[in-house]
Length: 339
Image (cartoon, rainbow, N blue to C red; front, side, top):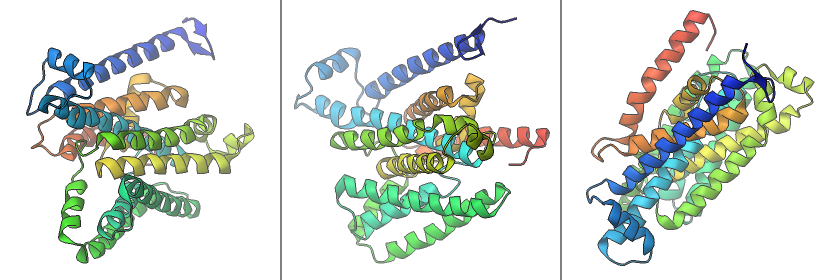
C-alpha cells in the first residue's frame, strides 16, 4: 500500500504532481526561448543576451526583440493562463465538461464590447477596450447564470451559448455597418486572433487584469472543490455559495474579457485545457488543477504561437482542441453521463 502523506493523498500522487509541474515549467521556458529566437528575423543566443543586457538599445534587432518578441511571449502566456483557468472554473460551476468561455458565448460578449470600443468609439485606449470586453463578458455570464437557474439539464447552457453567439454576431454586424474604414480594418485584424498585437506598454495592464481574475477564482477554491458534488454539499461545508459563485463567475469573465481584448477571439484553450490538466494530474483538487491548467494553457498557447504566421492561430488550436472534445464526448457517452 502506498504511503499516505499530507491531506490524505498517497505519496505517489505528490510525486506525479511534482513531475508534471516540473515538465510543464521546463517546456514553458523552452517554448518562450524559441518564441524569442525564431521569426522572420532569427536571433542567436548571443543576440538574445545582448538584447537583455541593453534593453534601451536603438538598433533594429533590439527593437524587434523588445517591441515584438517579448510582448508576444507575455501575450501567449497570459492568454493561455486566463482562458484555461476561466474554462476550468466554468466547467466546475456549471458541472458540464463542455462549458468554456467560447462555447457559452462569454467570449462573444467580450467581442461585442471590443466592437463597441473600436468601431463605435466608446472606448479609450487599452483601458477602455479591456473594460468594454470585461463588461460584455460579464453581462453574458450573468445571462447564462440566469438561464441555468431555470433548467436542470446542463446541456441547455450549450444551446443558449450557441444562440447568444449568433445573436451577438448580429449585433456586431449592425455596429460594423456604420463604422469608419480605418476602425473596421483594425477590428477585422483583431478578430482573427493573434498573440502578436500586444504592445510592451500594455503588458502590465493585461497582467494586472489576469491577476485580478485569478485572485477572484483562487479565493473560492474551497467552493470549487465542493461544487463538483453540488451546491447543497458546499453549503453543508459552511461555504457561502452565492458569494463564492459570484466571485468565480466575475473572475472568469475578467479573465475571458482580458484575453479577448488583447489577443482577439482565441478558441478551444478554455474548453480543452482543463481536460488535459485532469488527464495529466489525475486530480479533482483545484489547488492542483488551477495552477496545472494555467501552466498547460500557457504551454499550449506558446506552442500554437510558434507556427508560421501564415497559419491562423485558431486553426492550430482547433486541430488540438477538436480531438480532445470528441474524446470527452465519447467517454461521457460510454459512461452514461449527460453532458
